[in-house]
Length: 304
Ligand SMILES: [Zn+2]
Image 1 (cartoon, rainbow, N blue to C red):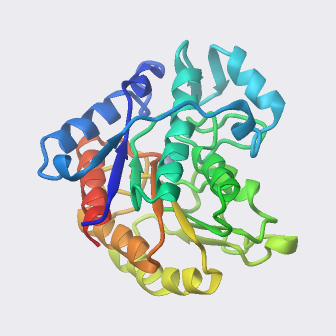
Image 2 (cartoon, rainbow, N blue to C red):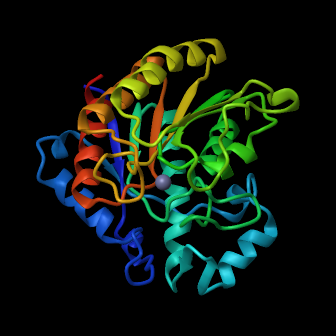
C-alpha cells in the first residue's frame, strides 16, 4: 500500500460564500463524511495544513494581490466572495499543498490528497477569479522547486481551464501544465494552440473537450497521450488540480464522466511515473458525485 496522506482542517468550512453559491462548505463536509465511513480511513496518514507565508505566495502572486486579499471582505470578482474568515482558509488551502510537498520530500508519504477550499486554479498572479483567491497548486509547484524538485508536471482535470496556472508557467521550461477541460466554456482560455512561449514552448498542453464528451474521449488522452508527455518531460513531482465538475451529475458542466471515468483518469496519472503525486481539490459541485469521486481518487492513490 502506498503511503498516502489526507490533508484537511475545519478552517476550510469557515470560508463562507453567498447563498446559493455552488462552492460551499457542504462540499467538504460531504467528502469528509464519505471518507470517514469508508474502509480506507484508517489506511490514510491524516495531516493538518499550515498557513502559506507571504514569501511563499509571492513566488507566483503580486504583492498587490496579497494585500488586496488581506483587506477585502466582499466580492473579489463577480463569482468570488471573500468572507471574514476566507483569507485564513485560503492561506491554509495553499499551505496544505506545501505540507504535502514537505512530507513527500522527507519520505514520510508518497502521495497526498488536499481536501481544501477555496480552490485555486483560476487565481491569476494579480487577482482572484472564479471562486479562487490564491493559486494553491502553483504556489506548491514553486515551493517544490525550492525544496529541490526540479521539474514539476501539473495535471488539471477540472472541467474548467486553469487559466491562472497556465499563465504563471507559460514561459517556464521546468513546469509542465497539462489540462483537459470543456471548451468552449468558462474561462475561455485553453485552446489546443496554447502550448507555451519562449523557453516554455511545448511545456503547456491543452485538450479542449466538446460538451457531451465522456470516458471514450478522456481515455485516449489519459491512457495514450499523458504517459508520453510525462516520459518526455521527465518530471520529479506530479501536482494535480483535481476538479470533479467533469462528472456527468455536475450542474456546471456538460462533460459526461462517471465514477469509472474518474478511476481511469486518476489511475493513468499515478501510473504515468512513480514519483510523488500531490492532489489538490478544485471544483465539483454535486455533493454525491463529488464525495464518491474523491473516494475513488484516494483508493487509487493508496493502491496503484
Ligand atoms: Zn471547475
